[in-house]
Length: 257
Image (cartoon, rainbow, N blue to C red):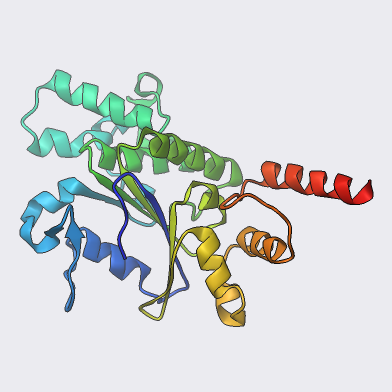
């Protein structure tokens, strides 16, 4: 499969389907035993340690990996250790990374990561990757363990990143529902193989009639696919609930009249 630069890909699959193995192949923690992974048409094996600067991965429960004494030090750790930048340059890049995820370093920078909310810890971990300005951001199960409000905040952050078109974003999840409105592509893995790849609409149309695969798809995506099959003129790749409710209300009004 291939993804255009600046695109948003969702990788969906059950436990053991190969999601985490795939993303480890993207950033060089693993290399494929056959085939190739290409970034900008260049084999990942050619990048060496520089691959980590191109592909930033936020693994599951990243807040458990926070270890510095302050939020600022955690976000800027890699720059302080390896970049050779001045303190002012490091601070500016840390502020920019924090702003990208909706954190205010003036308020939180001096606080211990252990003293902030779980949602903010997740944002600190993301900022610690974004401070390197990777071309591709990969998030492995980013919504796991977050309360509903924090999930909404996370989706808003990713929506702003997507609109900037400065990064390719990949979200890996067993529940793609919250991220559906953001996706340009959806890849479904099953037992280490691609079950379907394409737009969310295409994937749901492809897998929606398979009882086993249908259970894996987001419920709202299956509902929309079924409604379209029944003749409802719902716009393509539209999964925002307020918009869907409005469209269905229009149809109900037409049917009633």
